[in-house]
Image: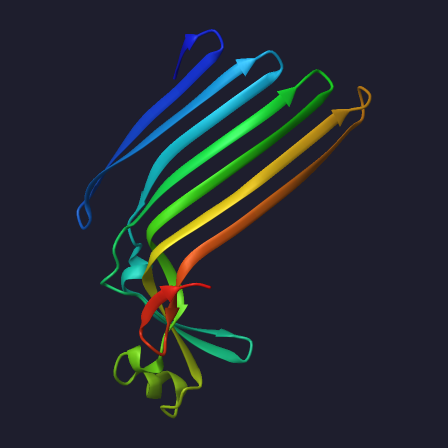
Length: 193
């Protein structure tokens, strides 16, 4: 972190990830803040990397939730998940009043998701062992990589110090996601509508 000018702050970083199964990955981060009087303007960018967990890769287990029985399956064919995150923020701050707005977008590739799959994707014998009668009374779920996904949103915050003892404030957040979805009938991901 450094301040090349009195009104400019820059933060930069890099993380080196060495994963024996998924290789070496570098995930950088860069953010800046400009201060002009009572105003702060910020922009940021970072990359992310997430390797599948042991649970996502290989665990098989049953979970009863209400009247439904789920059979969860890991997936040894999972790829690591990566992301690019951008944000921008404007903030106004005085002794008695503060407000800010932040917009962001996060694009993910190979997002690891737990999804419902056809009973035919269960290991041989699992349906009779867990459903009892080889019927479809069990809901199989498997970890899969979505081809792409993104989240985006806006956060707005404000607070007003009415007196030394009393401050009121409010917040609003909007979040939306878009992703490919798994079509269990066709056995592949397709764009969400």
